[in-house]
Image (cartoon, rainbow, N blue to C red; front, side):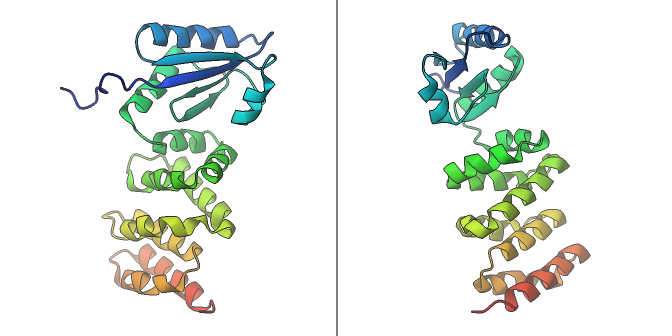
Length: 221
């Protein structure tokens, strides 16, 4: 069996929010209905937020059309092809990495931050973007912006093991990024982890390692 084909019964459920007078809602609803009939969704629940505003409040949105397919929340108009793409990723258990990449590419930094604050374990999915050489530059830059925004909240400590592993990446830019982000944790115990990067074959990695070590050593124990 092709490994990309999700197993039977893994079809994601979808929640769709609409409102009277929304010109685009019927288009998205029709596309979702087709995916349901084709067996690409397990269940489709449509909610009129004029009658049930508490549902919109619960999911944290004020705009329609809005749809959640598996773990992916999508606002605005989306074609059947786009919706099918997210349904397939959800069925495959692809995680939040592709979703975060899409959001960061399109400038939706706040949405990524909101999701991670609600679900801190999603930081692990965010860091997978640094490992993937196909991650667009805009998304890579966005990862840095997210981590710097979260720095004061102490959430980065949970992904220290992930960042340690990334310092051993075969790709110099990934090692450099991981080193910098380890420095954001402010954890002096990471000094022995970073010191070997002073001898990294890449000059930029060595420079970032030196700056990171200087910053960590300046902090009180």
